[in-house]
Image (tube, rainbow, N blue to C red):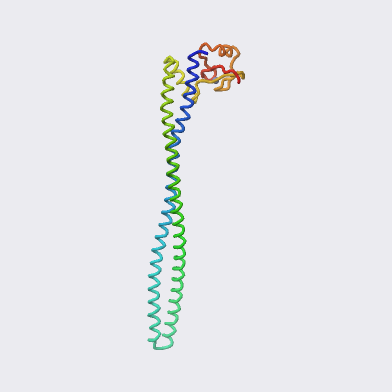
Length: 237
Ligand SMILES: [Zn+2]
């Protein structure tokens, strides 16, 4: 086979591998971002529980103070029962006491509800904290794996680019420029194979029998008449 054609085939192999590695080098940092984002979500969940617990604690304190006020009111009203001068005043104080009793019962019920909520939030908080801790550990491990992989991909890219460039220097500049132009225009495939099915491996268009003969002889790099890619003959396995 023509030496230049062999170099073109080789170059295509390098460029296909490079494109895959470059895609991975671009993808891996996004994976690290996703790990951080998941961790951020777990932190937010814990913060939300803590905020709610704080609000509940404050509300409970307020309700307890309110209850103290109501209790004091009750003591005062009880005392007034001894000071009333007639039945009308007596029943007025009694109904006041009844109202205070109801207020107190409501307050106590609210406090009970808030205490239950507080307990529930404490459990939820401990769970969220444990979840966050587990996730942080997992994230550390995952990130280390991804970073190691990224370093490997980058070092492979560096050495592969060097190999590719030294191989590319074997081609005359105009031919290399053409190859690179086609590579760019034809989504990363500039060199396509043709086998006994007699279609271009790049665009699947049929190749003329005359062109097949020339391809088999492979004296100079030939182009697909349809997509403009370099063609080479490949015996069917
Ligand atoms: Zn083609």
